[in-house]
Image 1: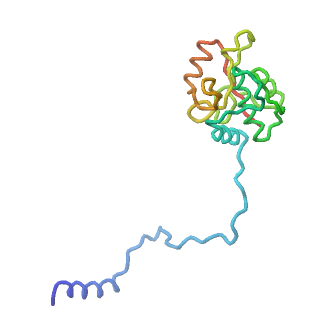
Image 2 (image 1 turned 45 degrees about the horizontal axis):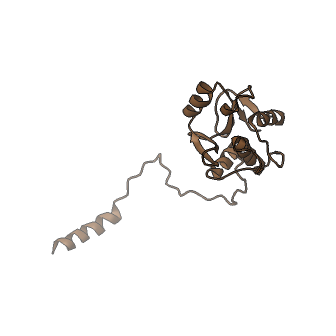
Length: 181
């Protein structure tokens, strides 16, 4: 009898008679499928909707009014995103940071103390003579989505640290955060 034959004889004899050890605490019953699939959709919060729209807009030139000067494209970009997801932004957009802050306040956006994903971030400068350090964008996970004046496109140019360094420390602006409702 060769080795293979002996092994096969042993295997068939022991395999059929030796029970598989089981742990009594582990349920080996296969899961059952629900009788009806759920038609319930996952509802997103307003902040999640704004965040998603901002992520989808990265790399695009966004404006509701082609006559707005390049310095005000940041407010136009945020206006465009908010209008696209259903907020009642005027058809021509809101062309400046202070105007957009005023609009958000009237719409009931909640001002919070720190950045949150999907919140609108505004580097607010009350001195209208110093518009260079006013900017607005949308808080993303690792940075801020806003219009990049160098490219004319909505991108994630600023990290939170670079935003603070440029607008707050260098420019003297105050960063404000508005959570959509």
